[in-house]
Image 1: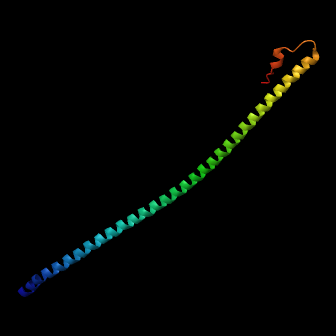
Image 2: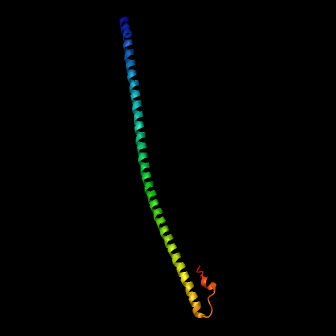
Image 3: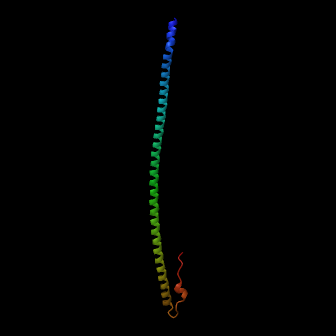
Length: 131
């Protein structure tokens, strides 16, 4: 029996080496799995960020379209305002011409009604207020 115990003791270093190798392999596998899991997490984060970037690009494109639309609206309204201002200036000039014509007609009417009396300066320069 002594020899069988001795044989068991002789195999202990070999068994210990096997167990150490198995432990090293297990540790290595755990490290590999941990690294693979980290890579998977990073890939997932990368995909999420790509989705966010795509969504932000879509929002940016929508906002750019909206800005362009507002710029066109402002340009159209500015053109309309400039046209209205030009028409207002023309109408004011036409109104001044008509007021002068009315003043002249009043002078003529006054002269026609009283040929012996010259027109007074207030009649010559009187412009009616139509406001």
